[in-house]
Length: 74
Image (cartoon, rainbow, N blue to C red; front, side, top):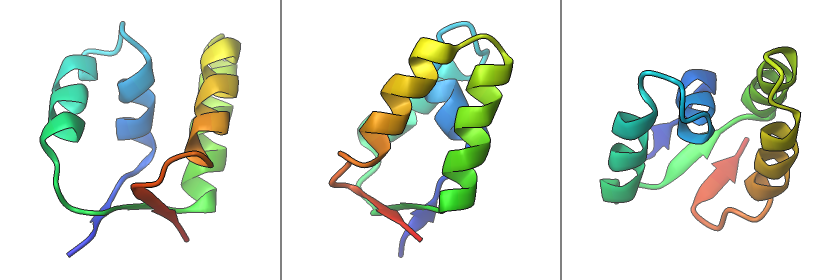
């Protein structure tokens, strides 16, 4: 069974000041199930990062989404 990853988890995974940052990274590190996200979630996540002044993180995560072998984008 696949695990759908939404905006909140992606955001928390790259913003150290997010209260869930550590928990999300731990979960991602231990997860063995295939990850799934959507192009809408990617758009929303990158827009949220930009809106909150995280331009460099938005660029890095945007590039990373398409390099992720373990994430299917639907």
